[in-house]
Structure formats: C-alpha cells, structure tokens
Length: 142
Image 1 (cartoon, helix red, strand yellow):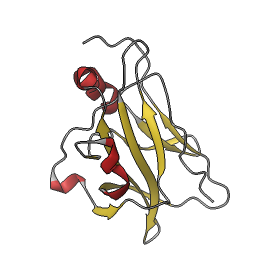
Image 2 (tube, one colour):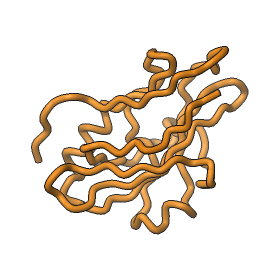
Image 3 (cartoon, rainbow, N blue to C red):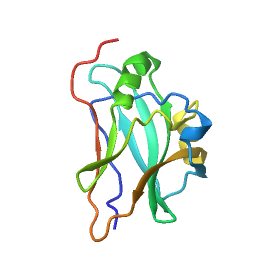
C-alpha cells in the first residue's frame, strides 16, 4: 500500500527543532519498520541522520520521525530547509514542516529512540498510494 520512505538521502542537511505538545499526535518507539536516511551538504562532513515511518491511526495518515545531528554547523540552514519539507500522497501535499521530529543526541541512539508523530488529517487514499517527500529548492547560506 505505502511505498516505504527509505533512502531519502539528499544533498541537504536538516535540523529538527522542538515542537509544542499540540503539534505531536503521539510518540512511538522506533522499530525495524522505520526507514532511515542521511542528509548532508556537499563539502561538509556529517549532517543529519534520521528514522521515519508513516502510520495509520483510525484511518488517518501520520508521519513519525526522529533525528540526530552529526554536524552542528548546519543547524541554522537546516531548520529553514526542514520548515519547507512536504509529505505528499498521490501528488497532494498533506503535511508541511517537519520540525516536530524528535531529536536525540547521537545517531547511535536512533534505533532505540522514541519518534514524534504528527497527523496529516488525511484519510488513507484508496488503491495504490504514491508517497513522496519534497524539499524546498533554492540557495541557503549560514
């Protein structure tokens, strides 16, 4: 049904800022069902590693995620990139701004972490579902 969000590696690094309690629908432990990704900028070591999963709760799609910085230099620019990130189902944007993802201190804690989830408010579409994550275009400077 859902294409698993794996290999979201890109030439971008992102920062997940803290989210208020009303933004988060629930927290779930990271399991083997989570996809993993690493985002980085060309020319800088490290960047950001994360785990992400789409879940369905009472027919509504939610996106869950947790991440860790591997290079603090990208935090400011990464936050702007994260703000413009979008989850799309069948070409329609159902969630924008991933700053609600939980943050852990080190990448080696990702697989045992708790992920923050946010509801899209969108029911699961019937039939095949095309899932995409889009990042903003443009130039960002620190």
